[in-house]
Length: 456
Ligand SMILES: Cc1ncc(COP(=O)(O)O)c(C=O)c1O
Image 1 (cartoon, protein in one colour):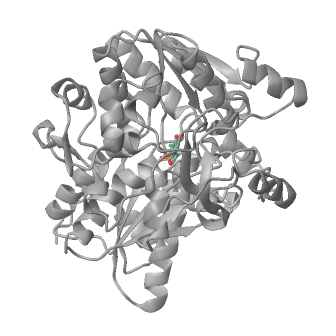
Image 2 (cartoon, rainbow, N blue to C red):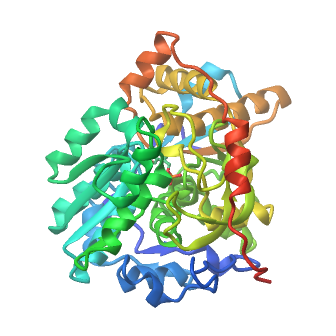
C-alpha cells in the first residue's frame, strides 16, 4: 500500500463509457407509468420533455453506454477528479480505518452536477433544442446547467427553490454570469406557481414544486425541453464516471473499499460513486457495504413508503415506484437544499428494496459537526449535502476503532460549500436547529399517494 495523499490520473483515463447498473441487477426496476392511463410510458410519451437519445438511455439495459467525444472533451476541463486518502482525518479520529474520498468539488460549478449537465445539454443541442428549463435546490444543479448551456449555446431557465434562493444569493449571480435566468420558486411565471402562491404566499418552495414549474414551461413551449438534475436513470448513468474513476484510483492505492458511502437527495451522486462497485459485486467481485445517507428532516429512504408516486408536487410527471414521503410533502427549510426532495431515484429505491444497500438519516447539526471536523483535518469545506456523506464515513471509521478493525471506507465528497457560508455562519453562531419533519404533514402527504393497479 502506498503512502500517497492524492491519487491522480491524466485526461486519457477519463472513462470512455458510462456504466448501467440495470444490466447486472437480478430483477429490473418496475416500469414508469403514464399519469393518465397508468400504463407503462413509451418513448413517445416523454418526447415533449427530453431528446430521444436520453429517452433511450433511460430505458437501456446495455451494460456500457459510450460517452460522446464532445462530452469527454468538456469533462477534460476537470476530470478525472482526485481521489484522496484522508490521512489527517484518520489521525484526528485515531481510527485504524483507511478513509478515501473522491472529490467532485473541483468541477466548474463545485459539485458532481456538471457530469450530467454537460451530457444532457449536448444531447439537447444535437436534437436542435433552443432552450432548457430546470429546477435547482442547492443551486449546484442550476449552476451546472447554466455552465453547460453557455458551452453549447442553449438558453437556460432555472426555477430555484425559494428558501435556497434566499440563503444563497450568489448562486443566482453565478447562473446569470453564464447567461441563465434564475427565478425563485414558487413563482408567478407559471399556472402551477400562481396556484401555490395563492394558497401559501410565503411558501418556502420545494424541489417538487420547482420541477412542476419547469416541466410546465417545457411542456407548453415547442422549442423548449426540460432537464432534471437527479432521480432519472440517465442522470444516474452519467454520474457513474465518478465510481468508474474511483475503481481505477483504488487500484492505484492498491486497496479496495469495504464500505462505500454517499449522500442522497434524488440519488445521483450516491449512484455515481456506488453503482460501479455494486455492479462488480453482482458480477462476482468483492462484497461492499453500501450506505446512503439522507437528512432526518427529509427521510425518503428510511421513513418513506415504497410506492408509485409523482416526481413533482403539481402531479404533472409520470409515476415512478420509489421511496417517497408523498409528492405533497414540503420539507422544512434546512440548509442541505439539494436533499429536500420528497422521493428517491427509482433505481436507488429498487436496490434498497433488494437489500443491496443500507440507508441512514442523521440530523443536521451532527452532519455539520462532521463537516467541520473534516474541514479542519483535510482543508476542504464540504457542501452541507456532502456533510451527510462525511458523517456516514466518520461513523463507520469510529465503529472500526471500537471494533479494532481496519476497513477501507470510500465516500463521495460531492461538492464544496463555498456558496454555503450562511449555513456555516448559522452553525458557528449556534443558530442551527435540528428540524424534524412534521409528522402530521407527512401523514397527509402519504395519504395522498396515487392508487395504482398492481404491476406484477
Ligand atoms: C452538492 C450536492 N450534493 C448532493 C445533492 C443531492 O443530489 P443527488 O442526490 O442527486 O446527488 C445536491 C443537489 O443539489 C448537491 O448540490
